[in-house]
Image 1 (cartoon, helix red, strand yellow):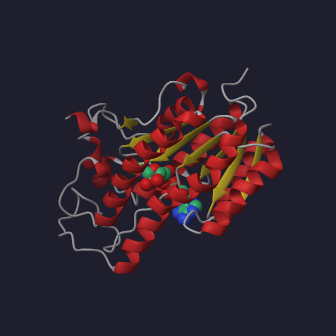
Image 2: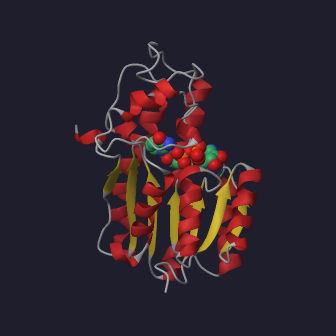
Image 3: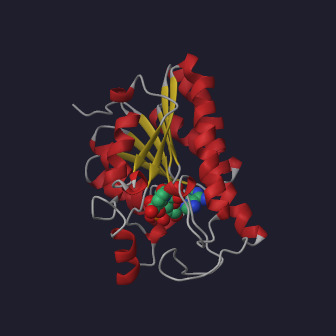
Amino acid sequence: MGRLDGRVAIITGAGSGQGLAAARLFASEGACVVVAELNQDTGRAAEEEIRSAGGQAVFAHCDVAEEAQVRATVELAVSTFGRLDVLYNNAGLWLSARGNYRPGVTDAPSPLLEDNVWQRTIDVNLKGVYLGCKYAIPQMRKAGAGSIINTSSIAALRTGRGGNSDAYTAAKGGVIAITRTLAVEHAPDQIRCNCIIPGAIHTPLAGPFTPEYEEAVRKNIPLGRWGQPEDVARMALFLASDESSWITGQFFVVDGGYTAV
Ligand SMILES: NC(=O)c1ccc[n+]([C@@H]2O[C@H](COP(=O)([O-])OP(=O)(O)OC[C@H]3O[C@@H](n4cnc5c(N)ncnc54)[C@H](O)[C@@H]3O)[C@@H](O)[C@H]2O)c1
């Protein structure tokens, strides 16, 4: 018996990294997974992979910053699988005005971002969470309960000089704040809302990788290694399942101990 048997889960950004790991894990635990992804190639590939492994999945081409596409994604979940139980707001991006700049590796100042970079960063990382909840919550109410999992970042808790991350940190801080509000507002409907705060996870978003960059990050992680997408996916599975049924409005840092230092 799977930990998500009979559940329907939308996972945004499920074509890569943490979202893909969660899509594989949720499907292997019995969930019907909606792979909501901007990149059509990786989204379709994830759908195909899950189906080939015997799981249930459907691809939804979705930019989480576009309201009509988010609404259509929720409609697809319900028309395909009949209900909606879980929304994992995982899609995100980190745009850098300085290309490959990485904190601790290159010594660049941190200019304010270009306006368009600011706007896109906020739209995808924060507004996308709001839009997903706007359309998912009415369906969860119909289902009688639900679990929303938001994705913040340790960038919202700790920072350093440089990194071009003013918009990113603002968006990810906003994700923590909206998690609390959603949790309290919707608790009477048994809709839970929690937030994962990943540390350095070895995915394309954190790249491009050089040996120097990888080592500079690794040596500051008490557990001595980068996080893998599966490290986060296991936390998401716990929050999606009934094992966390009395947990809402909380944040779970998955960072190998980095922020404990
Ligand atoms: N990798 C890290 O070190 C790290 C650390 C903290 C937080 N995070 C957060 O974790 C989440 C997952 O990132 P990841 O590390 O797996 O990166 P990733 O780049 O491997 O995956 C992100 C996925 O989101 C998709 N995406 C981007 N914009 C989208 C949009 N507008 N609509 C729909 N999909 C979109 C991308 O196509 C990609 O498939 C993000 O929210 C990210 O900010 C990552």
